[in-house]
Structure formats: C-alpha cells, structure tokens
Amino acid sequence: MNLRTVIELRLSEAMRKAGFAGNPLVQTAARPEFGDYQANGIMALAKQAKRNPRELAQAVIAELDSPDLIDPPEVAGPGFINLRLKDSHLGAALQSSSGIDPVPNRERVVIDYSAPNLAKEMHVGHLRSTIIGDAIARVLTALGYHVIRQNHVGDWGTQFGMLLTHMQDAGANSAQLADLESFYVAAKKRFDEEPQFAERSRQAVVALQSGESAARAAWQQFINVSLSHCQDVYERLGVLLASADVMPESAYNDDLETTLNDLNACGLLTESNGAQCVFLDGFKAKDGNVLPLIVQKSDGGYLYATTDLAAIRYRNRTLHADRVLYFVDARQALHFRQVFAVAEAAGFKPAGMQLEHMPFGAMLGKDGRPFKTRAGGVIKLSGLLDEAEERALEVVSSKNPDFSAEERQQIARTVGIGAVKYSDLSKHRTNDYVFDWDQMLAFDGNTAPYLQYVCARIRSVFRRLDGEVNMRVDLTPTHPAERSLVLQLLRLQEVVEKVATEGLPHYLCAFLYDLATRFSQFYEQCPVLSAHSLDRNRRLAYCRKTLDTMEFGLGLLGIDVPERM
Image 1 (cartoon, rainbow, N blue to C red):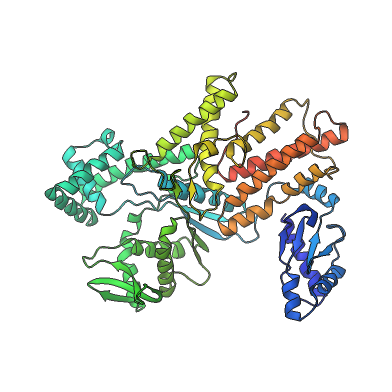
Image 2: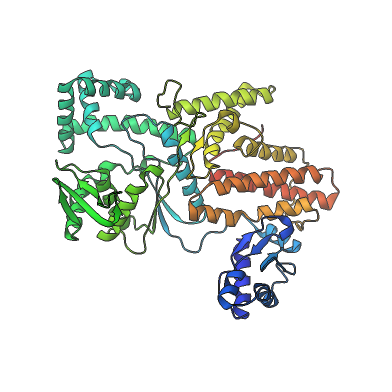
C-alpha cells in the first residue's frame, strides 16, 4: 500500500467536492511537527482561481471525509495542509502489510546494463552500470513488471582482428587466454609497433566480418573465455545476469544493412564525405551547423549508432518493449539523444515505447581523478572485490575474534561485496563519487555494514527469545519511537515505486538507513524482551517487520545479510 497515493486520492476527491480539480501535491513532511504528510498543491490552485489559499485549504478540509485515516488536518503557513495519520490506522496497515503490492499494469521493460567490451577483463569502469542496472531490474521485477535483461557486450570491431592475429601467431590455448589483460596488452603493443602485424590485423577483421570459418572459430574461442570471466564477476557481485541475457553487438550484424535501408526509405540518409549520415535539426554544434549521426563509414563499416538503432528495432518488434532503460555513462548522453531521435523519426520507436538513457557519473579516487591504480593503470574488477573481502576480513576479525576462521571469511565476503555495492548505490546515480575504503566499510553511518549490523542485532533478539513471534497482535503504536518506526515501515511501497519510476536506487538506500536509525532509537527507548506481555509482543512484532523489510530492501539492492556479525 502506497500511503501517499491513498492520501492523494482522498484529497483529490475532497478538492473535486470543493469545486476545484488539481493535484494536491502530497509530500512527506519535512519535520515531524508538520505531521506525516503535507499537501502543497492548494496554493497554485488558489492563484489560478484568484482565491485566498488558506480559505481554499479550509474548504478542501471541510470536504475531506477520512476519519478512519487521518487526524483532523491543519492549515499551515500560506495554505499548506498538514496531515497526520491515525495511530490506529498505522497499526492496522502494518498488520495487513506483506512486502510490496504489484503494479496494476505489467509493462515489458528491457534493461540494457553492464555491457563490457570483451577484449579485456571487466574493470572498475563497468561497476556502476552493472550494479545500478541490476538493482533497478530487481525493483521492477518485485513490482510485477515483465523485466527483460539485455547484456549488450562488445564482441565485435577492429580490436578483435588484432587479438585474433596475435592468437594465431602465439598459438595461444585457453590457458594463455585466461589472462585476458596480458594478452590484450601484448597484442596492442605489436599493433602499435609492427606495421605488418597491424595490416594483418585489419585483414583478420575483414575475414571475421565476411564469416570465414577459421576466423569465426578463433573469435568464438576468445569470446567464450571473455564471457566466462564476466560471469565469474557477476556471480561474486550477486548480479542476476546469465548467459541467456547476453545479446552482443554481433547479434545485430545481419540487421545492419536492413536498418540502413529503412533509414533510406524514410528519406533520412544523407551522404557526407563518403559516409552515410542522418542530420536532424534538433542537434547543432557550437558553430550552428547540424551535427550528423554517422551510421556508415566511407569504407562501408558500421558504427555503434547503427548497432544501437538495430537493437531498438529488435526490442520493439521482437521483445515488444514498452520501456527500454539504458544504464550507460553520462558521457554518452548526446549519442543516445541522437539515436533515440533518429529511431523515432524512422519509426523504429512507436509512440507508446519509452527510451530512457539512465546516465551515471564517474567513480573517482581521493585525488578527485578517475579511480586507478597507484601506477595509473586500470583496476580490474576482480582485484577490487578481492581487496574488499580482504579489508572486510580485517574489520570482521577484529570485532569477532571468537568466530571460526571459516565464519569470519564468509561474513567478510558478504560485508566486503555489500560495502562496495552500497557505497555506489547510495549515491545519486548522476553524480560522480569518491571511492573511499574507510567510509564504505564503517559500521556507522549510511553504509552496508551498518545496515547489515542492525539486521544481525535484530536476529540476536530472536535467538534469545523462547518461542515464536506472535504477529497476530494489535500493532497500534503507543510510544513516539514506536510510531516513528511504524510510519517508516509503511513507506516502503512509495519509495520502491519512486525508485522504479526514476531509476534512482539511492532513494531505497536512504529509506533503509532511515529505517535502521529509527529502529536503533526504538530499541534504545523501548525495552523489548524485558517489557510486560502486551508491549513485549507488539515490539517483537515490530522487530520482525523491521528485519523482514531491511532484508527485503537490501535484497532489492543485491546485498546479502550475514546471520550474525
């Protein structure tokens, strides 16, 4: 149940009865003394109607028939309506709540995320797309959407000619290919320094693109090893991407010529310096000239834009997507604006289909520059996760020296990976952020270890409990700390829906941190196991609801919770 939506519906009906139609603009109250929610839409309506906003607010309140839901509302300031939910309603709502309700319309949502180039091992630059996209996929699935994951890996292009030629010369086997990074560096060095090798590499690309069987077989061997590396990283991260979700660039090769023919049939293609381009008036350079979207080079080669357009055709005509989300670096914003506009102009994107670039900022080091090794090299994602587990093990071992080595290692794995993911997900997606080991592994503040610790703390309560928690009790709060906790528990639905709409998982992180903070305040102010029977049963039920909500929310972020810490 989305409390804010329920209140909005009641207020909208009251506004209609008062003779005014409009959006009440219900928001969570900024401060508890203003109530639980605040309606801010009256002032704009009053201005349109040339009415006193406070008088209009009073007229709306007079028509508001919700004694079961809210206490008598108050008009504040120039015309805000402050709303406080009844304690009895909070208790009943919490009693009947069980996770989140599915959305009424099960749209088909394609999520394009991770998408590493297969020429190298995954590095830290792939982290954000991978874990943000995965979190949104989980959220949309939980809300009942039909989610289709698409891992648009880069498995085509000139770099593969270089790699295949080096593979042929070296007589490389699978064991040698296992070290992708070293293999790529060696091939690139030869490409830059040996003109004959570079020319042979270009010829290998032609052989690959023409479908020569030997070239295709060698290329497939390389792709298999690369994908295996990716899958290892996904499994360590707890990311729900599988081989069935891989839809590589090469999958669209046979559609590229048809895509160009369709663009030409629409009158969109223009030749410019031998290249095929699309010029749309909405995209202009600083000098005022229209920026082209190049879809075929003068040598006949295709570009990322061509593949992206073919992918949109496929996602419309085959996957029947209602919405397509692209979790790709913010630096690609212009590219996607152009591709989406061309797709619409060509009819690849029908009117009812949404194409949304979900940009994200960069991961920075403490020096404010892109996060790299001390030597300035790219950090492998597998190496980053190794370090996360090692650092977490030091922290876990210092706090729990009595745990077995095996349990400490298992907890460290969960805490370390969770810390890396949460540190990213808790930041606004579009912002750059500084990667800080000390901050992300801290057991206080808005971090995964703190949230995991709160869950472990609640579990410790249940371990000391003799018997099961009775959930069939009156959950009406009787203490301010209880009320604060219950109110936050009931906001899960509206937060999850907001994350799904905006593609911003930091809202869920903020909700969970607020919930953990409120639980800690409740636990300090309200005895649980030592309380008398009625309070004890109610508060144990609050503990159970909090643990379930925390684990569910962290699960939506792809973060596990240790049994104890």
